[in-house]
Length: 241
Image (tube, rainbow, N blue to C red):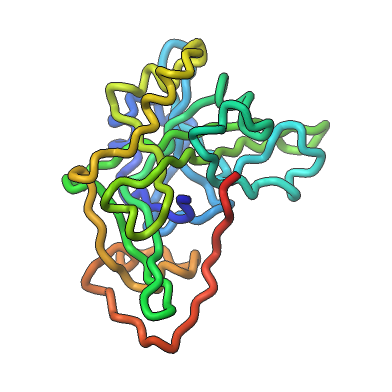
């Protein structure tokens, strides 16, 4: 699964990378520890181009009566999202790119869950494959929310978790975002794990376990300290559907 990630990149760079207008976002500060239920930046089709928007991370199906009972769906399995009732409509008509430049996974070491930060070797930002929904009822404010698709891990992520987020290559942005693209084989071809040589992973400080901690120290390898074997941690996260 993908339960935490970062977007340290400036809004201007995200806009340039996705070739998307950022008019709908008033401001953005670098984020080092984005957690479920928080806002994320995503690109989606708009008119003849693309726009950047803020989505609530944790998809709320449009047919839910109460949004407070939804929002648990932070991840969706790429292999089955096209047929799962929760994600099916969004898969076929509301695909998006979620801005990121790294993500976290945890590995059990001597009974302690140690966080690792995974990023591209070249340090560049990228786009997770995402799906989005719009929830609206009467006079209540509409909520736009999203989920991140996951796939099998590559050799870098496999020692840490049995899933990893789907990362879309820039050459595939148009196809992924096109709501008229209905060839399942073409879409699923984009779900192959990013090649292992493109990623690097290293242990980081356990301060990332607390979603209130959001600073450069979260991703700094020099902040890592080996955990004492007696510590047990309760991590915040949700299973994917």
